[in-house]
Length: 291
Image (cartoon, rainbow, N blue to C red; front, side):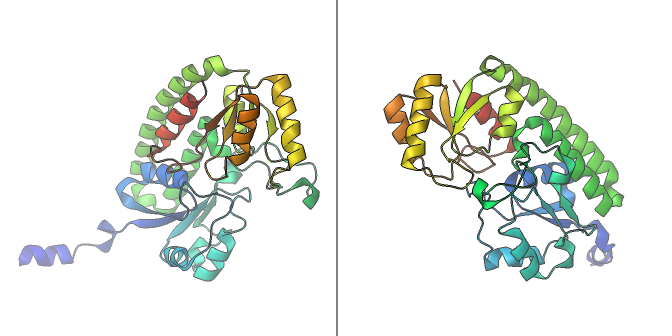
């Protein structure tokens, strides 16, 4: 009885943890690796969903209400769905420009920033390409930002967050050397994509994107554009079509039938395919998918 009473009288902080809402699974994985037992991650979107379009359903609103902080990808990738969740949840801890809010896009160098922004260019991202986590070097930068963010929220466990980051970074450097070796022979390969979501991965490993099945971002392929792409493939002989998992592969398969080009599914996040169970597995798959 005395032992039970003693436990009940222990300071609440010994049992406390932070509920960190994150927009995508990859952010949740980094946050959990650094936060360890002192945080719980609330992942809003699933890895096999189109990251641009997530339905702000009531279950997600409820998750947001219990969050102590929010980490988002940013660069307007969540622009269509996260602001309504923030507004409807009414949780001040998830609002932008507060100490409990982290926009990861502010901590990396974005590429492909458009010269001008109007509807004639399709659904472009005015801040630049938002899929920056697909460069493994950026993962370390993001991990550093998340480490510092957690420390700002929970100074008491700073030493743990620093040590967890160091362990994560050590393992990640080993993995990056492995992926560099696997991709070394692929440098200079020409590829086609459905949507330019692999821009950072391609830049990291020297792949050259020469065309997209989408004529413009977010615009479905027309017959004319598809025929032009077939002509380009027959002339340039790229190695493959790198295709995301959330758009239909119908047009890519048609092009493959006409040209003999290979269609390669390229997952973008943890859970995008069943075998992608963690962040290292994502890059293991991506670095091994192109033959």
